[in-house]
Image 1 (cartoon, rainbow, N blue to C red):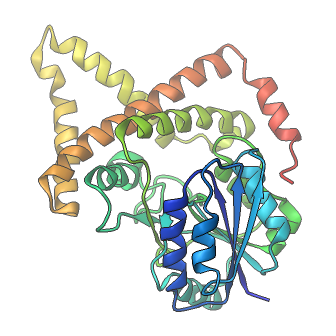
Image 2: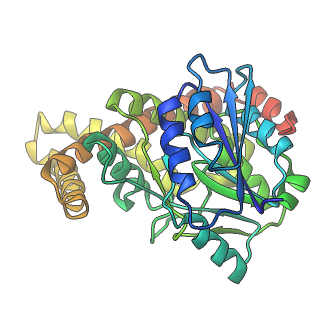
Length: 331
């Protein structure tokens, strides 16, 4: 039996799955199986699976559309490995990923881990800018695997793994937004170790347009309040930063009509984003797009956060939702 079982939920992403499987076929360490769960797609990836079936140990399942969490749990129920790995279908895996991961687990075994993500050279300028805004300390406080972090590291399912023992005790994913943060929190509460393995990174394509990025990040902001209702002690100061950015930006814009220097703190912050991105990505266009992506990332998250906080916390409309989530077993 393979040691690792890679579980990938898919919805209408045949091209991305082809790139993902190609990268898995080139791994220097091959003791793994790949379980692809097609979650009711109208554009299937079956052809891509057939293309690599003779190279990679792939198990392909098609089921009706029920959501990412249920698709992952469907794969978990059919996995035979001792350690489960989760990737998003729009990831590309460096060829040394599993060799590096296996080496770390042999030296310092951990029950659950997460790895960071990066932008591949082949990605578009927009994707690189979005990747910067999602990983920079200036925008996210390093909570997605940065070298400096403002809170405990929480694995995300674009690059996450845990042991069969974890699954047997904690169960699978619950169907909800930010289901990976919920899962990581339940794993930590059950007493398991969680580690960041920086060498086990993936290339994450993310959204291909700023419009889609805003929609995604807005939902992230709303789901943070849902997580707060489930786990009140998990809401940290860093999670308030985007909301403060929204409120502060509006206040500075209004104040600048009466006293123009009021806008300078915002301008200086955005210039810092531009400068750091330029140093990291080595291109002025990506640096400029990084400013736009960072405004969307902070503004979208902050607006979703504030809206959910008003309705679910101040008006008390989130209590029933939180109780309903608690009753879900994650199976």
